Amino acid sequence: MSTIALTAPAAMPPAPAKTSGYLVLAPSCLVLTVFFALPMGTTIGMSFTDGETLAPTLAHYQRFFSDGLSLAGLYRTTVMSILVAVCVTVFGYPVAYYLARSRSRWRAVVFALALAPELAGVVLRTYGWLIILEDRGFINDALLNLGIIASPLPLSKNLFAVVVGLTHVILPFGILSLTTSIQGIDPNLERAAQMLGASRLSVLRHIVLPLSVPGIVSSLLISFTMAASAYATPALLGGARFKVLATMIYEQVLFYIDWRFAAVMAIALLLMMLTVSFLGIRYETRRSNRRTNSEGVFS
Amino acid sequence: MNGVLSCLFWLAIGVVLAFITLPLAVVVAASLSPSSTVTFLPWDWTLEWFGALLSDRWLQPFLLSFRIATVVAAISGVLGILAAYAIVYEKIPGSALIMAGLLSPLSVPQIVKGVAIVLFLSIIGLQGILGTPALIAAHVVLALPFVTRMAATSLTNFDGNLDRAAQSLGATKRQRLQHIVLPMIKPGVLSGVTFAFIISFNNIPLSVFLVRPGDTTLPIAVINYLEYSLDPVMAAVNVASMIFILTVIFLFEKIGGFSTQLHGGSK
Image (tube, each protein chain N blue to C red):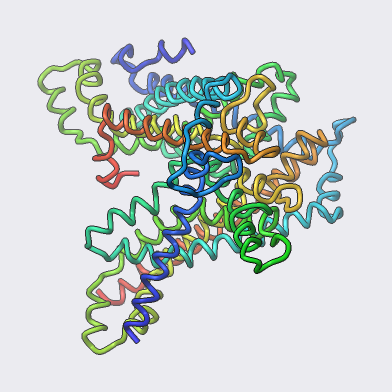
């Protein structure tokens, strides 16, 4: 790390500013090359080569698409991420609307309650859900004691548990993105509609919801990508019975020691994320193009 | 009609807030509950589970996570300031492209970065650095884009006239950097460094590939333990680690006062 001390800005000669500019960038670039670019390149390379002969091959990709287990994992990942994205957006919307519009002193309390869990870390929150949802957890205990059910409900180690846990982890991000979007809507539009006799419901349906579509889309996309790449929550709440791509990659590396297949799965996950981000960017550019066009008409 | 809708609205907010706080409340209750099955009895509580935290089993991983997070925060702080300085202050040619390159790790999921690093180290025969060195390097890769972006935002928002005034009054570049630029971007950099500390301290998806037996970070020790048992010691570990993180944030806030920065709307 001695290079950092040598290139610190305070010690810089004043004259060749541009060269020194590149020089101070060197440590960041070095770290990112050695521990990000080269590993990513290696992973992509490994996915296309044979483990013994190092000859180029598509065999690992063929295996991914022909063995049902991997495709089932991809399918579970997709279903889980869509459900999480919808739950986060639907549950987050009322809170975001309140945060965007309220001027009461309770707003700060709601804000803190909605966002503070983010500081608690994923493990703590997932552990909380484990205690609640487990076979001998709170819900099953209570229902068994009350005699409502005879045997524990299957609340953990399945899709339901993972969706609950991930929705909890991702909800603050959804709320933030929706709040920003709703704050951007002119409140006078809602007041005008109400004054003209529109009910709250039709204000919501015809004004607030349509105008917050960009926020809804970004909340869906953020939640989807965060859910698809999550590791700890699916590992703890889904376990061996509900495997997603992230937990399957871990298994391939540490239990099956099949590096090339792990590389293929990692690339599949990466491509899925990049596709969703690309769709988001395309939606955003189309929308801003449309807006500039229509502004041209009106002004 | 309006009444029904606003009832539903308040009900929805209440349910969502209950959903958000429920698991946290459960963990806190579990950490104070005297029986080894988790119970909610407010009149009956104990701190004995927290005593178990002082054993080597939890102290070792905590100290390792603490050391790693400190080193990661320091390294990514220095590298982030340097990179932002080159891109925003010196405006070197190609800075937009370089910034995109520096932020590119953000678009790759952590689990993919983790597996890529472990595959790369295994292929080139450097498994030896798994454990602390690899953990530090990987966490720096994770934190650096955030710190760079926060430092760059502070440098962009900072009033260049102050710098020009100092220059016209004859201050050398070194004096300007030391007395004007660095103090002005301090809150942004400190919030970046705090963030780097927290994401390193809490990290799972990268660490899970890079820990070695005997060289295990706290979150990984916790999830390994959770596979066998849900006993209240776990709750105590989690609560203690949350209190620790809140203390860190509080201390950095005292030093840097970055909440003004956050309220100012810069990201």
